[in-house]
Image (tube, rainbow, N blue to C red):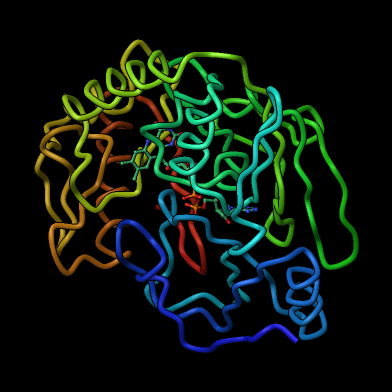
Length: 291
Ligand SMILES: Cc1cc2nc3c(=O)[nH]c(=O)nc-3n(C[C@H](O)[C@H](O)[C@H](O)COP(=O)(O)OP(=O)(O)OC[C@H]3O[C@@H](n4cnc5c(N)ncnc54)[C@H](O)[C@@H]3O)c2cc1C
């Protein structure tokens, strides 16, 4: 039977480094273990939520009343065959990219600056530089407490930073369709994309990536918040990045409440100055909301 742990702190599982304890925590390594864990939660009427690298997550300081899962073992492994890559839902983008380069397969280079997993990428159809998960995904094996099945990008409802996935639906495996490309070409593209990132975003700080989705407006969320004078604005241990205003950094001892207060202030200012209601991109876990 899969081991269920208590008291695991979400702060250890998120890149921003905040969040209280999960009511229960498990690390399934096979689909059978994953089904066991989901059944264990369902029998107790406990919701289940999966954490990838926690790079797009803000979890409640009070903790999360759920079974939190982090995929390992075969659910984080990667293999390539001709132009297909199969990966566990918990496989990191870095490991996928490395395997793709070794097999001279291109198409996933855009993910080099996205510090997440295959499952997390599908959840919000993560993307950068004009590509997103819908451009490489063939299908994903989605497991729940009661059934499992392979879904196509259309069935997953992938659109701009969105899928139809709900907590309790776990991406266990994915299949990517890639294209032949030389390892040197891949390496050069990745170096170029990472240099672009370093020049414009706080890549060496504790953040959860973009705070808000870009609104339908000539200005992106970052430029809008910059024009509101919010760069460097601080609440508690959380600060709006002086480098890019659509990022919140943990400047030391930040709580999720600090980050939420900054988000509420940013939304208020964008509404007053631009008449725009910003929608958050970061996923909230637990009993928290942005005012
Ligand atoms: C420095 C930095 C730069 C970033 N740049 C970008 C960028 O350019 N583009 C972009 O789109 N994002 C970006 N992000 C945000 C983030 O990296 C992506 O959204 C990433 O895809 C999240 O993956 P994750 O595995 O960390 O998911 P998590 O943050 O752990 O989880 C996010 C959501 O996905 C769900 N989830 C995770 N794994 C699974 C699974 N196996 N099955 C079902 N649900 C799952 C979680 O429950 C949660 O709701 C950036 C973040 C950082 C810190």
